[in-house]
Length: 190
Image 1: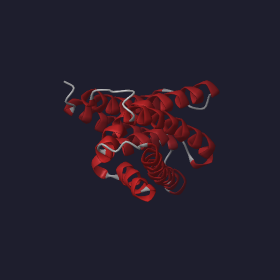
Image 2 (image 1 turned 90 degrees about the horizontal axis):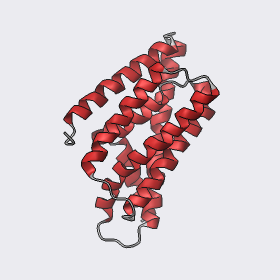
Image 3 (image 1 turned 45 degrees about the vertical axis):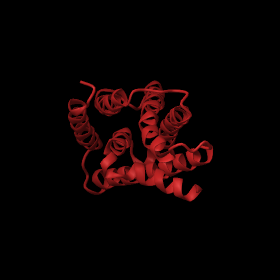
């Protein structure tokens, strides 16, 4: 059973039909380069902690949030991250801590989004702790692939193609913002 839910979590985060989560992780990493791997690890861990908590609380029906609001808030987190990427300096200790807090907070929102999918998988099964843990580990493994591809591609563009990192960040953040705006306009929230 562990392997099944691990695979489902892994496939869910990498599912191109659920690209909003992929887009958020890509936007989250856009301001960092390979040498910032510790910062990236802390950032992704903050996001993981955030979405793990709300995924568990929502799966246990402790926190219940309307799906339409969550589907509106997720692209809003992408847009906010993209704007933050291009408007703030990320090299000060204060801004780095602020970025970690935003990752944690936005992780809470994304966890609620993951929970809808997870609940549909579980059905009426009473024992959710094992499947919840396995699903979450699968999501994290998928996330690490997204981070690796994003940072690796950034390395190629910046170090091999000699594009300025500022331009890479602007391109990725701008693309993420554009898609987020389209998702916001298409949300059933309106």
